[in-house]
Amino acid sequence: MTAIQVILSFGLLLIGAYAYKKFRNSIVDAVTMGLFILAGATLVIFPDITSSLARALGVGRGVDLIFYFCILFFIFIILKLYARIRRLEQMMTKVIRNNSIAGAVKVSEKHVVEKEDKSQ
Image (tube, rainbow, N blue to C red; front, side, top):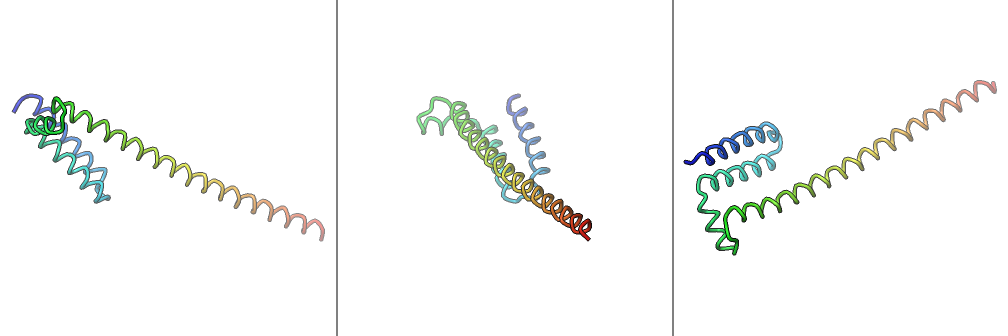
């Protein structure tokens, strides 16, 4: 095993431990991350697989193939995070709107009660 394989394997181990800690409650996320880490470890230990797969797909080197897949993966992650942010913004807007309406109703009711007290 070369030095880079040891470094990458250790990095994958750290990522796996972090992912386990973060995704303990979500089975789907934990399994997905586990599969990615397993695939990464396989490709680190057996780098010839990526070279063979790259040649079969018409890419010059295995590293280039991994780079292309990473670009697609990061675009997917960015879109997923963007969708989550939009959903959170919409939920926050709804909560703030409902809270404002409820506060306005309370103030209005208080104002009506005060007017009734003064008129009596």
